[in-house]
Amino acid sequence: MKLLSYYLKIIIPVIFIIWSFISIGAPVSFGLLFAYLLIYKPFIDGYRLIGLELIDRRELKKMFNPFLNLQGQYFMELYFENNK
Image (cartoon, helix red, strand yellow):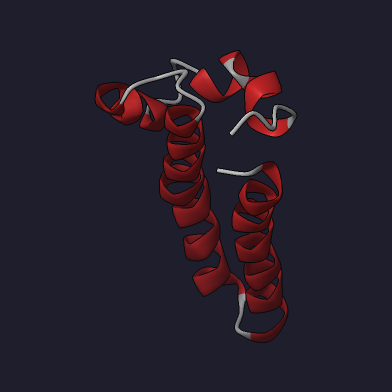
């Protein structure tokens, strides 16, 4: 996954969530925010790390565990490496 593609995949939903706060209302927006933080973002981060060959598919489920902090462990690779 290219770095620009990765950034677009994580930023465009945030823009939609901000729009929903403004136009739809807080309850729906908080639901979207939690879905983004707990489901979407770990999934996208996991597939980026799989694409960079830092983890394998079996470790994707570990991305959903907040206590393992794999996003923090692979911070530089997620946000700054443009290898693949």
